[in-house]
Amino acid sequence: MILEKIIEFMIWQIRRNPELVETVRKKTKEIFKEVEGVIADKEALSVIGRLGSNQECDVAPILGAKNQVIFFTKSTKFITTDTPFVRFNPSGLEDIREEATEIYFPLASNMLLVLYGKGNKKNFHLLNDRKFIKEINIYMAKKARNHVFGSTKEHLESIVGCIL
Image (tube, rainbow, N blue to C red):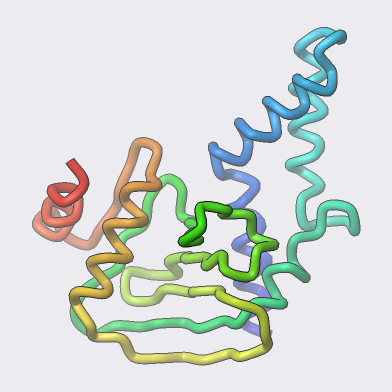
């Protein structure tokens, strides 16, 4: 039940993702290239608004079909960004429907939801591997548009220093 609510919250965050908004806007403008730009923008916002709320745009089953693990840590903290829904696929195909696409979504400074593969595994794990947490934080920081948020100034400086 809790993971289903988290997935609903993730969908809300996906709708707010600037990268998604821009992609949908570009695709909509391609479709409506003969029509006034305002119509294309309204249609793009309509598509984003329907995301997760009807069958043609429902991503909840796609997310729910992935294995789900919540990592929590007692020491090193996770960061978040202005793009908190972060995808990773070693092949470069970051479509959420791809089985190899992993999704990272920070829930709190000490909790991170990871969706991966295909299956119905649901786990909750203590993670204190500082190197692994830093790798995840660096990857999430690289995906930020403008802002990175963390628990302390020093923590943020150590992450941002690795991507500059």
